[in-house]
Length: 355
Ligand code: HEC
Ligand code: HEC
Image (tube, rainbow, N blue to C red; front, side, top):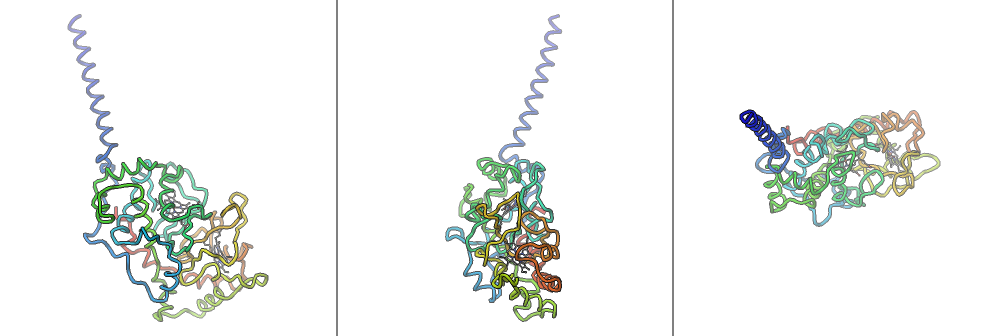
């Protein structure tokens, strides 16, 4: 009897110890330095930061200077953008380590994705189509999102992390998670002169990276530098883009709202609304922001709700300001295709460092 009791006790003790050990293992895996073990790998970076502060072709410079929304306290540096690049591709920024910014803003599709609505960390769908991230620095007002609800890029970049559909994290948790990853202290040191990590620095680094995404190597760019020539159709398309306007709205050219050479402006010639009962856009006025039309040939589907599948559809479906004469459709498309810059999109500076 006595012996049996001792035996049962011993067995129980083994169980208790075993259980304790397992739960400790689990806690360790989830906390602090343990997060490196989530198998997401560590970023591979060159010892000297890549150059994000390159010189752009001269014909781009006046519009860049006029429209730059970079704040004085967050100027672009190579180390700042490098840190931003790592954060942009780091899945640790989502609650369950499955989604990074790049999941919905993929370099191959011009930093948007090719679906109407994007899938968030738990499989939920966003209610608008993901936006391309080209020339974001030159939307002069600095306002972000289709409905311009975010006043600055610095304020915007931290919102997806906390969005319940997109990445589902909270800020104290993210800062702790980032602090626990072995590769971050030295990146923060280089970018901001200190290994201290906080939400302001995370937002500044992400904003620097996004602002550095500036296409400048398309056929259009080569033509503007005298290094290539448009075909007759492309040239006719540029003429239409610059000059053609609907008869009832003679001032409304494509270029008035999609202003070359950056193909973006924060002050459209007229408010534009794609009729959408489900989404009233900027201040409920039925109007929407549009990002740069550069690379537009690879950013389908189109519009804030991704409701139009092709460029042909954009120009043939009764959309205000976008319906053109049937004979002009292919001509305009030929011109818009010259805006595709695959070289900049495949640049190592913007690529996934975790691969
Ligand atoms: C689950 C998909 C998803 C993820 C993840 C995501 N985004 Fe987005 N992003 C979107 C959608 C959708 C919009 C448009 C939302 C709207 O207008 O309401 C958007 C808009 C933006 C814009 C506005 C661009 C403009 O011109 O106004 C920026 C900048 C941006 N995202 C950056 C980021 C960054 C940085 C991250 C990572 C911290 C990120 N996004 C993560 C889907 C996503
Ligand atoms: C009055 C301003 C205005 C004019 C004029 C205009 N656009 Fe747009 N365009 C916009 C806005 C705003 C959007 C996005 C609206 C939305 O998503 O609801 C847009 C969207 C687009 C898109 C889809 C882009 C994307 O990524 O979703 C294309 C392509 C386009 N426009 C081409 C043209 C062409 C070509 C012309 C001339 C025939 C033209 N636009 C005239 C303001 C304008």
